Length: 141
Image (tube, rainbow, N blue to C red; front, side, top):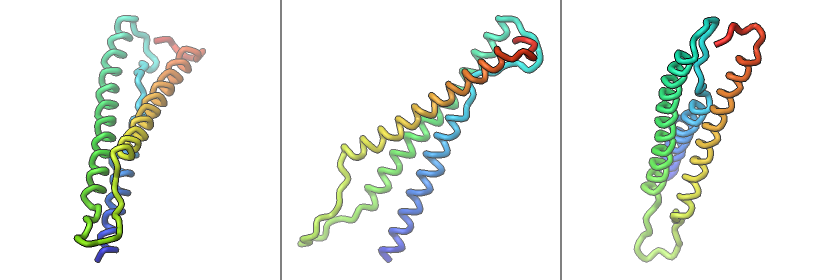
């Protein structure tokens, strides 16, 4: 019975880490924050309008992904706290506890991963822009 409960908790933790946290981090890293028109000339004003709209949409998506990662971390901590065994009266065996410092470190780890994902997305976006500008075959913006 206890082993079955442990397997269920481990399964839930793995699902949360994979589907709610890792997937959102990967999605955030894949976002391109620049929208370059393909094979058409646009004015500077049109280009700026296109970029403003696209960057706002990308920023909204990144904010959603970041919030999902934060909520996933909060839910994971809550799941672990809820499944921690309670001390039985008269028990001499100490039970493991989760301290606030460990929780803060756990959340900070995923905050750094989110920062890295946004940084990767930004670098990839600059690379796309750089390739387009350097392209000799490009017809311009």
